[in-house]
Length: 160
View 1: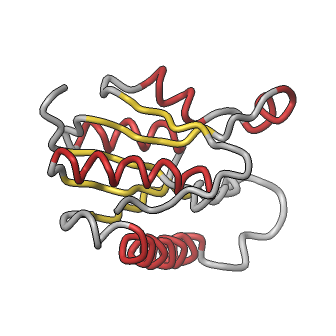
View 2: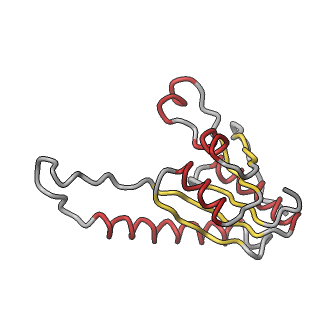
């Protein structure tokens, strides 16, 4: 695993994922590593051609492209606000699909040395209903992974 030259950090634009991004940024700065920040968009369900009812009234592919473009803009803004001052080589990446599968696929494709992701710390029924992307990535990924647990009322600061 060492030296760490490529870090992949996932974000869902939540406060816990920003805490993970702070950690990933610190690690990238420490190791002079490249940092890729990825957001995965859930695919729009497409009705089967034989499904009853009228066909969709809008172009699903165009809608997904628009989602992808706006998400990439958000990632670029996030990098400019939280990362670029510290890490010169930070790249945005937007994928469409199942979050855990896409994160592990990108880590393999990019030959990432470390995946950094937040865990929201959900328990009980919330975890059962929403699942845990971090837990799925831990099970699927061959790449070493660092999970950053969200802290309640944590006023995390940017690395300096």
